Length: 245
Ligand code: PXP
Image (cartoon, rainbow, N blue to C red; front, side, top):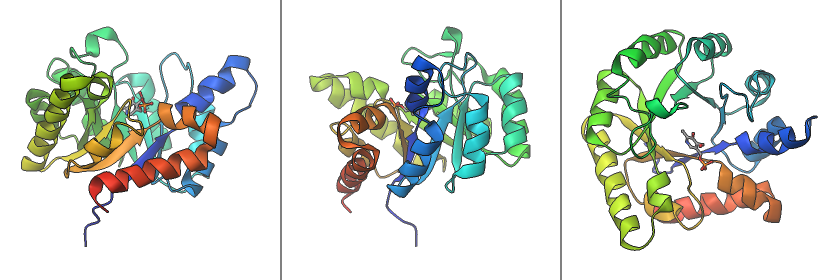
């Protein structure tokens, strides 16, 4: 039986942001990942940026060795990242924009504009046994291009929805709903992420096509006040509530 429950991927990048503010080893993002798993995370997400502003190469090495749930390795489509990820072989990689020209207007990866570039990287990732996700806006052309490129899944950018207020938020939610439905229609697995918090998560969780959320900044920030296990447990509850579980 297929579970209706949405998987929760916990992004631990900003534990590394705090660590790097002082140098040294504390707080350790791998320790946070292990705690997140204990609190019910279904996977761990980390983004190795080209400038290494938070997660570092050795964090990714340790995550691969120490966590029990699948690692979702966020990365730009570059040769350097391809070398690292095909050596580490995490369960999945999510290709994200890092440079301005890789962005569409609202912030996702411009798959249409970078079609030929991505066509080089996606097959190499898949050949290494890594499932490929593309982080895109809820736009039919971007979704269609992702499917044409053979991506295993897409992650719809929820930032515009989370930033919007009043009737604009309603409009953005409609875009996410339509985008997710289109993914369902063309048989493309669909995830969501960016900016989700206690206030915004429920309505997105109610969209039936979404199978996974990746959430970081809010969970790590809220952990300062209530602890990571509590912030994750509350998010889990709200996701289940939105799904009507
Ligand atoms: N999904 C992707 C592809 C991301 O790059 C990020 C981090 O920006 C997230 C999800 C998590 O976003 P947030 O930290 O705002 O929860």
